[in-house]
Length: 492
Image (tube, rainbow, N blue to C red; front, side, top):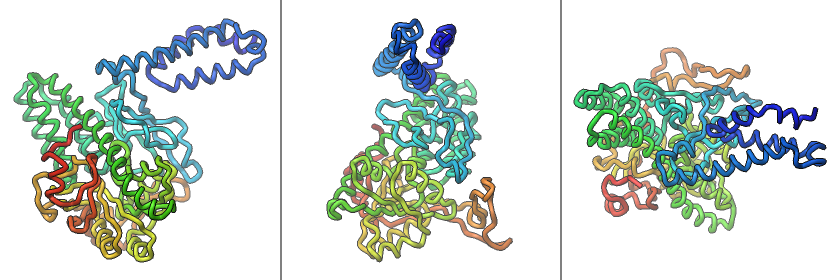
């Protein structure tokens, strides 16, 4: 009996495939593979109207039709959108050793709740987001544990408010936009465990909001997201409505973050294009500090968004990547993320940038921001200020890419931004992969060595060439910033 007829003996398989397709788009690949295999058999060439082939072709056309119809229907019916557009997020730990950096055996796909966002940022060719609700159980929030990158891709699931707080504080997630998105979903998780009585519910949420807001004090997006959830729930008449609003608002924050970063890329592209034209098509050398890529946001990133846009426009770019001690976000995250996107990059020590600038090897600098005052002062990862000073001395444009959710509309002076101080061990030790392929931590200095670990510094507005935002490029000046934005307005 031929393989084709063997397949025909199992009609239940087709029913399972159809059901599986609804939850996993990879079923398409299975069906295409089966069709391709059958097409190559002698039986198919001899008789194209076998029952197996006829059924498979019908099944393929039916699935394609249902996929298109269901997605189109979802555009007009928000209740069906999530069912039509989700992709599965598997909880999976994958060790990436020296010989397997491109060997994610089973893809970990991300969840998208917006039709506006293209699935762009990838790990080994598979589109990802940094945070998404489990489509099978929205009470589970999935994140990538960034402490283990680039050596291990680990998908963690948050199911309690305490886990959300720990994820932010202990840097499972980090970066302005992603901290805000995680805070939004953290508030939603808190709402699940909150009492049903309205007064008790509100008191419970207010108490958790205070705890969550203290987890990373410098990041503006943290408080911004918390306040947005609180405001959104305020008008609800019962606790169930508040919970639904909390989830919907958290999802909006995530989608909005991705969309804003995409727009930042569009506006920053023009700056890179001008330099490319002056260099007559030679690669544009961009220096960046820390990680303000898609791993620091929900998608696209802020500082990297213009770089990705330039790549898509066919402009050759090369990125100087600061290692960014002590967490080495540049070495561990930015370099890895750029490699995944096929963008030329070179890792450098934090103190190398000035030398490169002096020798004409840097055309522009783009960094991110954890909080920017409405007067233009920029708080970012420690070491950013020194890059701005060197850029000013060498007449190199210094840009800060940020969504408006990062702007603090209350603080006038950067000096008043609270600067987080973290544990000494982050400086006195370092994590990496040993010769056996195991992730390990080693001591860098003598026992008893004291360390001061300031997480951020502030770059004065006078050193900033411009702010690249979702609404355009603007000078780091109060009047110009307020002219571009209505105060506090960040919604799409």
